[in-house]
Image (cartoon, rainbow, N blue to C red; front, side):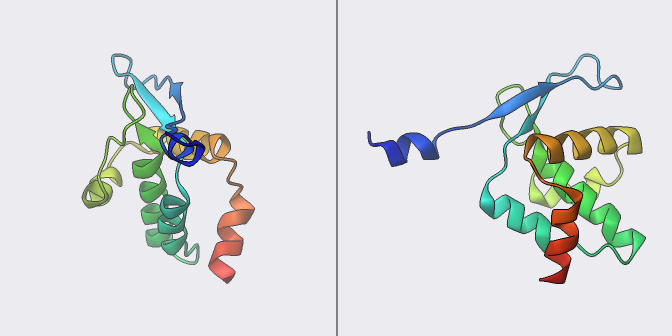
Length: 112
């Protein structure tokens, strides 16, 4: 197997403790460029409704199981919006930090 194949198989993630889910092992995933683009497509901070959708999209993409695999599918993003705000905030901000995405990047994506 070559270097390219090895690099494409890297599945980076970090465990995260969520006090509201003490018995669940979840992780924050490193997201792909395609996933980052998917998030950027919903960035529209002019309305509170779209901000909720943007956060839910990031949360669904950032959150992984104990093996780093996505917990929520794209089809479940509307359901993710109904998670408690404290949980969404924790996953969203930890995910931004872990993936080195700054809030400024979201604003810049909106301008493009």
